[in-house]
Amino acid sequence: MNYSEALEFLCQLTKFGINPGLSRIEELLRRLGDPHRRLRFFHIGGTNGKGSVAAMVAAVLQAAGYRVGLFTSPHLHSYTERIRLNGQAIKEEEVAYILTHLRPILEDMVEKGYEPPTEFEVTTALALYYFGEVKPDYVVLEVGLGGSLDSTNIIPTSEVTVITNVGLDHMDYLGPTVVEIAQQKAGIIKQEGVVVTGADKPEALEVIERTCQQRKAFLYRLGRDIRFKELIVSPQGGEMDWEGLGQRYRKLKIPLLGRHQLVNASLAVAAIEAARCHRGLVVGEHHIREGMAKVSWPGRLEVVRRRPLVVLDGAHNYDGALALKQALQELFSYRHLILVLGILADKEREKITGVLAPLAERVIVTRPDSLRAGDWEKIALYARRFTSRVEVVRDISRAMEIALGLAEPEDLICVTGSLYMIADARKWFLERKKEDFLIR
Image (cartoon, rainbow, N blue to C red):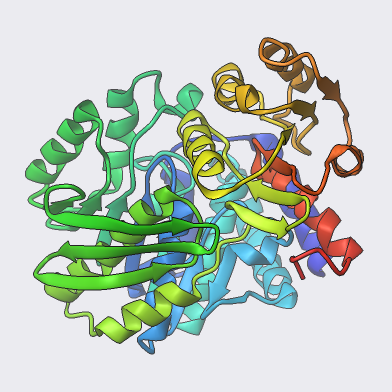
């Protein structure tokens, strides 16, 4: 297969949906020689912030001179973004080569009576096979969905496990309560492992602490073992003092925007320090500062234009919407907010709209480019509870044109609700390359 054919093959696997379980990925990796058993991992799970934490951990490890694999999902513009080595995306021809190798194995598995592996399972296998070939010093592995039955949980051990937080998301698969979701998230904790968490809900913490006790794992908690003091939260980034695991870092700068990114940065630094204390990782303070200063995570409070201000943010659940609301109120000065909103059907759309729509002068409801978009126009009904100035526009390109046409230079346009939509909005800006667009 060439790259286009390989992507089409992957696309066909989406018909198998989300099918939690480890038996298929275990058999697939066995047939590939178990590459995951020869790698060292930082395993990053949680409801929100896990992608940001993964990017930060990878950036610090790379600054320290290690060869670092990074596996995240979903991607914004290219499938290759999901699998990186020292910041460089896997090449298209490598994706095509590996999937060509995988395809007959998958077909033989089905013939032998196994359930068809899902698209995410095949992507995980592709990443682990690739990392097994290029042999990075460490792989930073972001959990896809949940934890215990997520295909990334096939790894036998980890240097450090991070559980960023536990909130209500993916309830159809993980359960309707914080306790049930926490049980899934805590499933990535390994026997005699090292765990860092920012979870603050008592019922979630109880599950995580009990799991650590049962598995004889060390646990470091934000607010108890790890502390940070916010110094600056601005449109240019954040700055904090950090303390934990016997170390102190003063005036640590974080380029990612929002108060919540200081929380994520605290967890990332803690993961590095825990690996240094327990696993012999060699990293100095200057590596932490350098890595943090260089970290980039597009589509998360990303400013792509100044006048009017245009901000893209993948706030795709209730807790993410709360963090975005706080950021909009604290970071930016503007006259009116124009909200471009598109939320997938399996999210808490009414609650997310209830957080964000009251801030807006106008709301433009649009459709995320996903099979999970569902009855996307229904979001307009929720938005009209807070403002009468609501428009429904199916195409994100047209929605962006309308928003920019309505906005005065002192206004702010915020595009949010789904990373699929963020990807399309970002692509729209990239394709136009106007002088006042900050994205290149």
